[in-house]
Image (tube, rainbow, N blue to C red; front, top):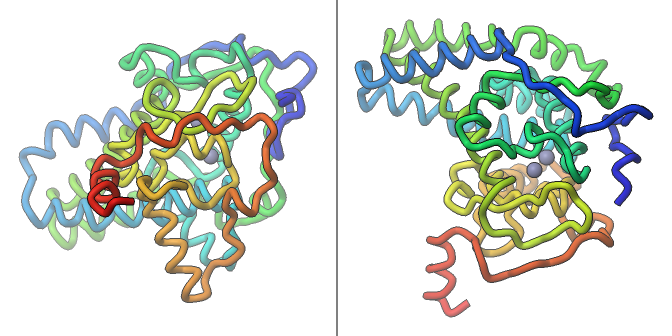
Length: 318
Ligand SMILES: [Zn+2]
Ligand SMILES: [Zn+2]
């Protein structure tokens, strides 16, 4: 694979060198996440009730599933299926509510990281190579600046979508209407669990899965010549809505299906199959529909997988 080719949105310049970069504190991002985390740690235990926890689940599951995994990652970033524009906008709105960044910011981070990870010797930041606490501080509170960054530009479909650009400008403020409705419905406990705890768990969980998925864990594919290999995070496969099957994602980035084997539960894929059955999405990409990659090697079919699913399959004699 020739990494100098870049990708659809990321184009290296002649001086681009992904090993030379500095990591700096990013005040806006850090204060945002710091205050969400502090509110969760201090007020979370004081305001916990069954109804507050139900609010947390009712808002966390759809925003992670339809928003982050299916909307932002599988649709906006990878365009791995077709759907009407209005539905994509709903997905992207729900993904913005996760509170990580604006949709274009998410796309930039994802694409530059994915592109840089192909390059042997890429900077520790982009390959999650620092020790775990340092990596947490870097990824959640800082930003990386390359000495000679590659050029990033979103495609016209995204650049000209005024709703997406509006969300990009206002992504933090998007929590405000939710917080006001929650306060009206259930006071401070609903706001703490429906906004602060939800954002903290979503952002921290995303970082943790990302850290593990580039450092340890089983892998079923190896990409010859890549700077970083993707690994699976079996315990997070279900909770991350399928995003934990990251070895598959490095193997087939444009596949709408992330859990490729029977022991890899993938709620995002199940959700897409339901939407396909009712006619809302189509043209779902899978490894079978995508071009074969010469650099891709199947490593192992036995290690990893969801422990509960593996037990079920063994009991069934599969
Ligand atoms: Zn990766
Ligand atoms: Zn991706």
